[in-house]
Image (cartoon, rainbow, N blue to C red):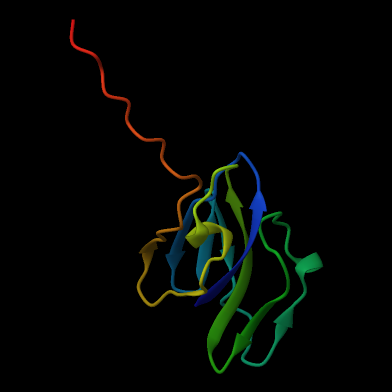
Length: 109
């Protein structure tokens, strides 16, 4: 499964989990198993606001474009994300939503 991202400034978060041809997006499973090789499923046929374009199966591999939400202070790896090729099932590690704020040292009393 290959995922490409379209970064978008949003406060909400994205959580993904892969199980074979099923991609669970924020708790909702989407089964792309029935999509045959060489076929394209139009964006309009998928009831999910996170899908950014048509889903295709090319040479057996699913290609899924997703919106990648990010905060106002997102790091470069989130603003310009590389595509991901998922081989194993499980939770998907996504680029960070925002750059973590530096810890403020506390003054001793």
